[in-house]
Length: 374
Image 1 (cartoon, helix red, strand yellow):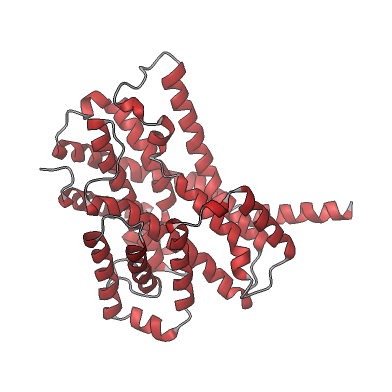
Image 2 (image 1 turned 90 degrees about the vertical axis):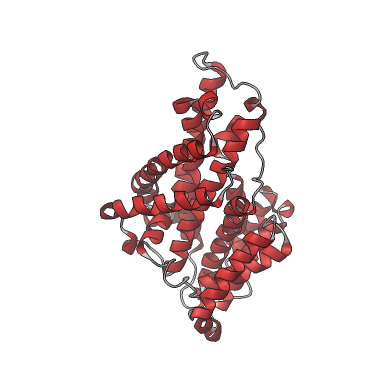
């Protein structure tokens, strides 16, 4: 059986939800912050997709040393379409805040503080762990260096599975948000200056590509959220049917999600889901929402887990001899580990830092006032 057989992805998905069901006493899906339960559930399924996508890439890498997109539309879209939909989620949620600003003005300082506390603590921890592991491999003398053909791939990219490139696009969107808000609400000039400076520093002018266009799909969904007729139709069974049909059309009909037509189809599908097409209750169910709660941890930690397991626990030489069924069984053994460490990461790293948002916002605001007084 080929390692790209769809049955392997389905088996990992079933295992994941079986484990979530067993873990339900420790999950608090109903307490997830946010007004969009369907988005929470969708985010959880997307995180699962990225993990399976990179596990598939690892199989080929171990056999050939080539880190390439899978030769399968399903496994390709489990990575590319999921990233595209992640960008749309960001565009939808944050432009939604802009549209609500007439009723509830945006606290720009709090928004950027929350983004820093949401993204940076776990990201910096993963980067530090990567530096230490790479240093041990390269310089300690305790570990054998990477052998051919596996030494052709950057160690840092292997450790993270290369997922951190998406965070650059996320930050550029956050920096662009004050300018996107101008047609809707008044934005203090200080934040326009800050946003403009950060866009220049981050080289945003070079990021106007197909990935940036995905955020536009999210913005469009936020605008459609205000259209009662669209929401009513999205919440109907026909809305879920069309949303799922468009997703399947992208997966089965296109080799990549990074092209205008599949991007447009994904945008329409997402706009339906964001506005109420919950795929007959699947996306708003408690288990997908619980998985969505730990999405960021899954996204950042699955790469290090795969690398450490294959490099140190099992060894590349052993894993490369496995047939596809044996390989995916090994990946299946890592699923409870990934869920466990992601739950711990959310509880002890993400959650505590997120709860400091209000406190840090007040401190920064007081610091600004004290400097003016002095």
